[in-house]
Length: 127
Figure (spheres, rainbow, N blue to C red):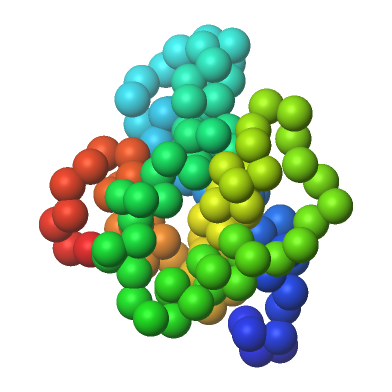
């Protein structure tokens, strides 16, 4: 199936899992620690509020097609809004997850990793 045939919310569903996998791998790369600490640290990256805030860092580095994938996810209408985030924050986070899902389905995991590093580590080398 063509990546553009997936709904943006389906891509966000996959992107949520893929992004969390990148976060977990990043945290494990920082050294062995109890799973309770790993979970605590992971929450610093995976909440809708945090992901929404990361979007501004990411947008200037996206290609036109990546920006379109983000916007499709951001503009998708979901019946769910978490209690811990405003609707705008949730939609921006959904756009971010949709972008990561899009890159995963496209098979462009190298690009996804590059964008992830920009968000988590900072800097813009190779982005």
